[in-house]
Length: 318
Ligand code: C5P
Image (tube, rainbow, N blue to C red; front, top):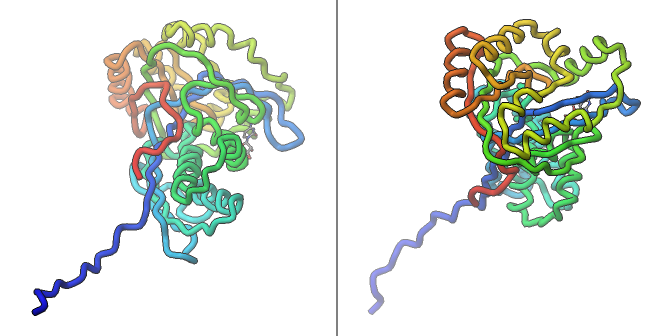
């Protein structure tokens, strides 16, 4: 006699999925030369990745469905949801390069200020590359991944690498830098972003196209401060050639910088092309005090405390 029949389980296994975290950055030093014929400015920059992360989850989608994208987190409403998004572009570029179909649902969780000069969008691209490479098992060698990253944007290779590094060229040719210890940062972000090309344009106007070629030799004290793990010396050596250009478009940032100084920040600069302002603190406690001062004075729309250096793009779950 047959035994009791069981209803077969119809719940299929969830589709494969990979989650990757990639950091935002601050330029400890950013030295910019005159606009080149290729439409870019030669740079020498010392990047530091900070522990504000973008998280990209790539989930296998049905054959033929292509790329789709959702975003959540702070300022998510300011992020494009179409193929102009760098995460979307990264998935399509990797698919085209490896010959796979770009059938993937991407979800981005923002943790870096949007359009703030901290490479949030570049971190999305770096994370999407690593996530799709793992999901599709395309196993791209590191140099090829870096090449795709550079094609997506000048800051994307650094978001892959993380930690602290010197960038040359458009900022995409990287050499890791030696550092000791942990640095405490405060970031004052604006609800309104600044467009990177506009800031470079303002730089061209201010310098009349005569900026000399950038030299890493000018960052000797900064590199020494990093090796020694000396935040006071690092604070004194922070430098940004785009700061005056960012201030010309956003004069209110001068007050944000001033308040940081009044709160005894070890140094304060505009981060990259801005408008985020970065202040270096002595300790976590001091970082919180600077953050509280900015908040009390209404000097930033949002205030973020964190540390650097932080690791580059890596898989956190699959
Ligand atoms: O490389 P990415 O697409 O992020 O650069 C955005 C824009 O920033 C460029 O189109 C260019 O106008 C400007 N840029 C530049 N020099 C660099 C990097 C970026 O002029 N080294």
